[in-house]
Image (tube, rainbow, N blue to C red; front, side):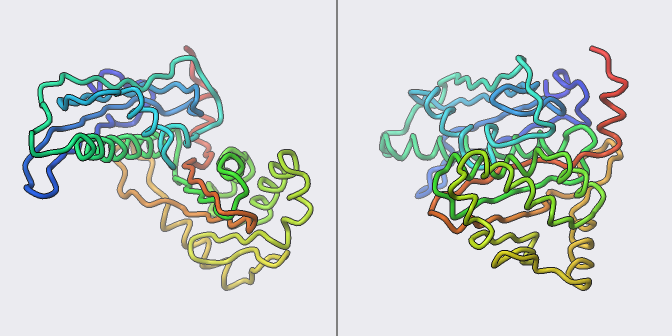
Length: 282
């Protein structure tokens, strides 16, 4: 089934978890999901089809699904190319064959299901980005210290959707100026007051290295060489097979202006993405 829904996907994407009673280890049920999507990925509308099945008899599936797709780095926090499509579906269905055991409370049953569903959704969302058209780097942007969750998510999306940031990462180029540009452009539009003080507040890391703090770049030749090697280490091959690793290129942005945070996943922009879409006819 995972293969049948593929288009430009490089490989089928499927994830499953078995839910167990934490005290007894007894199986409570299973959640399995499959996904299709490689280009035009920018939920809330994307060329993405996700089907999730469970045998657990759980009430209010819609609410469980809503919470799971809105988790950090889940379906509503990913992007491959910032383009949207009407073919966007995440569907959750239960056969209800596994009833709640008497010794398990209603809250424990719901919490166990929610935990498993979150795992399936975030894993499949990661798979969609990693298998994006031409993707060589999966970029994870964590934004902290934000005055709101919405601003944190938007700042992260501004980085992963910036063509200049995406192409610099594709070229293994630690171009911190492009990160500053993307963040400043977004914050300047959404919160002009914060933007005025942001240079002195924001602190940016690439991997474990501080690259911007106290209103200035924190870079030298040795650090740039480390960052280039880090980018090379997190790069994946484009041979059409399953990915050789699940590493991400991590960027952390501390806005220093609050206690809200968000995590988004995106990808670089390579020659292969251009080749696929320059020659693709629907």
